Length: 77
Image (cartoon, rainbow, N blue to C red; front, side, top):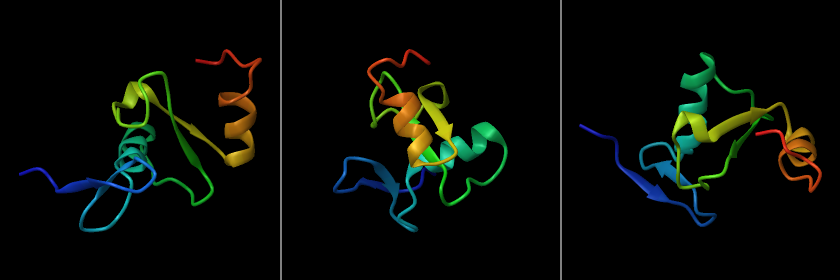
């Protein structure tokens, strides 16, 4: 049976039993370890409702996330 989820106020899907974002859970499975507290999961071209591993990238912190994923000069993915 699938875990129950909801969409939080920021538009991210979360597990009902823990409040954990589904994207963080999927990213942990993708990289094979728990995420560190400061690590940021970025949703790529398919948007934040798509939690497919191919749409998720992990950055070491918010600063790296903004520099690489949200820079107008960036073409990293």
